[in-house]
Image (cartoon, rainbow, N blue to C red; front, side, top):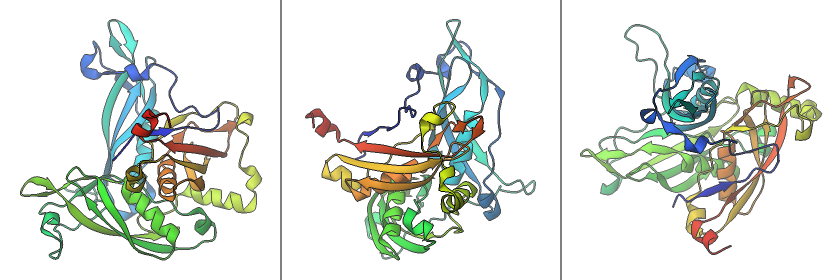
Length: 361
């Protein structure tokens, strides 16, 4: 069901693949000398999560090049999407003595957990988990959905705030139900109700992108059935608007000309540093047809993708999935005249089923 997704970036300035032999990277066990960190930047604790008392963990895997720079990063696990960006940003700034194989520095693949904990006292647990899942299934749930150990979110995405509703300052809610299979993948995402169809679509796409440690019954992975209500507003508890997005909304309202749209005017091309692919919605994968979406967003001063907007899509579900993924992207910071700027970008993303591609479609 989770089929190959091909991501294509429109502008020549945006190069998705790192130019090097990073795919030939070695694990630390295959080296004569493992990389040694010489400069390690600590991640910034998101203020909203610190305020809420949330603790978390992000598992980052990354590539170190022969010069000791981190050139590619990916997130394997993340207890909250707001922990993800600072963890990746920090790791991308780390510097190493390169790994050595046969007397030569080589590309090395490593993985490291980044912990976010509140230090309140010697016996402190460091905060609370961001998400609360019912400890036991409801009594009216079918036997196959009964569990005695609750599923746990291990990779989460924030919902896309529908752009037109955001600029009009429209708030609202959406409720969905969904099943989690014994491997931790969500299925059968169903919209129960929503104050706006766009809020419902954004919430469904968010859940499709989540991953879980599966529920267990008698020590074995089993199915689970959950529900979630998502609240959309600039200052909601789960996903408050970040400061950069707030700033950009103000710029777009007062002086949109400050947003750079000509990437050729930059001092240097920007390069993707963290670009996870969209999770293909079940409806798209089951239909077994090609799907495309054009997503517009702003790369801010720090290189983070902000305010993703669906410009067009051949399938609405895929459009929301694409926008959800783009909201996590990070790039090298755009600069013009030696100063950081905000850059407007449009990116086409394409899903082509494997068996369809094999037929030459």
